[in-house]
Length: 172
Image (tube, rainbow, N blue to C red):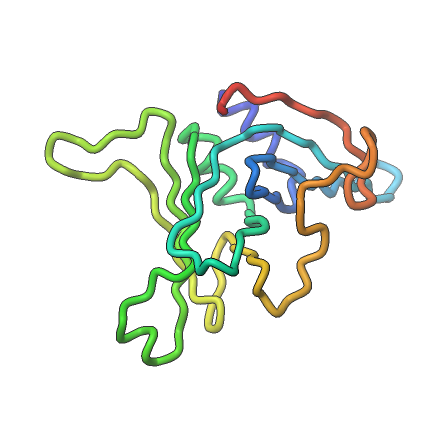
């Protein structure tokens, strides 16, 4: 994707939701010339492959809430796979009662270099202490997620927002 297209996507982006089935919903919030605000969404179908790692059997990934920095990285690196880690903590961290959630982005041209260097990008956050540019939302979270599965109420709206464009991605 060209830098100008990425800039255009990020210009008025409020946040994005990446669902477990690979759909990306980008929410825009734009101020119009007359002072009013317009909210609308763009849907990119089959955007990336989403994998879940280290997830307990009774828990499932619902969606990943993404903010502008992570969305920019995903678009610029042309990521084809996202790996969501439920708890990537060490034993000592778990003993202290902390959970470390991890998001691994793998570019389309993913490979391990000759020197054994992994070319993926890794981001972490501690849900009970600090947040990051993303939030992994699971079925066992105490926060009410709402719209827990990818569902369109019609061809023209999603969660009360007008869908202005549906894009079928060739990434899948």
